Each structure stands twice: as C-alpha cells, then as structure tokens.
View 1 (tube, rainbow, N blue to C red):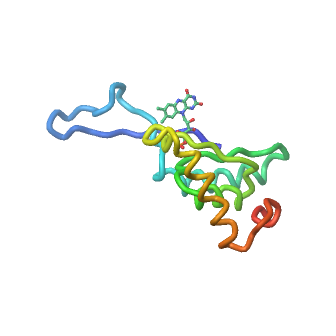
View 2: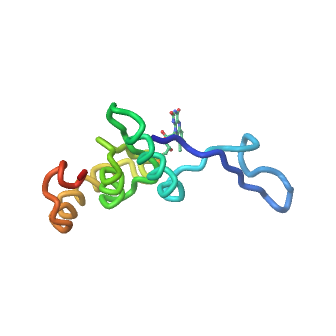
View 3: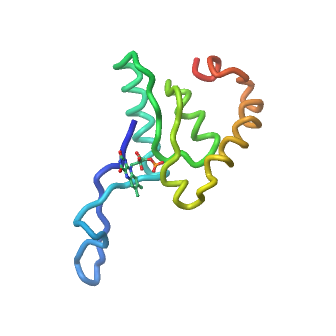
Length: 110
Ligand SMILES: Cc1cc2nc3c(=O)[nH]c(=O)nc-3n(C[C@H](O)[C@H](O)[C@H](O)COP(=O)(O)O)c2cc1C
C-alpha cells in the first residue's frame, strides 16, 4: 500500500503535458501523508500483513508506516535518486529507535 497517484504537469508555454503520456503517477514524499492514511485503512480492513510504501526516504518515514500497522516498508523513488538509499535508512533506524524509546518492533507497532 500504495502505488502512485494519477497526476499531471503542464508546460505553460506550449499548453501541453510535460510528461510523455498525458498523465503520469505521482510518487515520493508528496504522497506519504495520503498513503499513510491508506495504509491505516488497509491495516484495519485486512488480516494479512500490509507493506507500506510511498515517500519513504528516512528512518522516520519507516517508523511512520510501522506506527500505522505496516509489517514492512519498501523504498521506491528514493532509490532512483540514490541506489543506496535503503542502506542509509537502515543505518538511521537503529539510532532513531533508541531515541523514541521503542526498542522492539511490537512496541513501535503498538
Ligand atoms: C519510475 C517508476 C516506475 C514504477 N513502476 C512500477 C511498476 O512497474 N509496477 C508497480 O506496481 N509499481 C510501480 N511503481 C510504483 C512504486 O512501486 C511505488 O508504489 C510508488 O512509486 C510509491 O513509492 P515511492 O514514493 O517510494 O516511489 C513505479 C514507480 C516509479 C516512480
């Protein structure tokens, strides 16, 4: 949960879409608040594990998704900017978890 959201970008000089197709999919940090909400709704609606993705760039983003009930997260757009983004996120996660005084997955999730 979830994929991209339908979106457009217009070149005002030509009045045409900036995208190869007329519309495209919005991803990255802009969609995280929307997708967090969708993730929460999904978690309440199903009994199977929910994987959260949408705008995950930092360790804080990972905990956001875990807090709404995700069992795991994925990193999409951030990996295009930096193929090692996931490694940096994992490195930051250990320190962040100590800061928030949640040292087990279940406590964070709770
Ligand atoms: C360039 C690009 C290609 C994508 N291709 C697919 C795809 O083939 N199948 C799919 O299910 N999602 C695809 N997605 C959606 C991502 O898997 C992901 O759900 C979405 O981008 C939100 O995560 P993010 O904000 O971390 O990128 C693509 C996203 C991008 C940016």
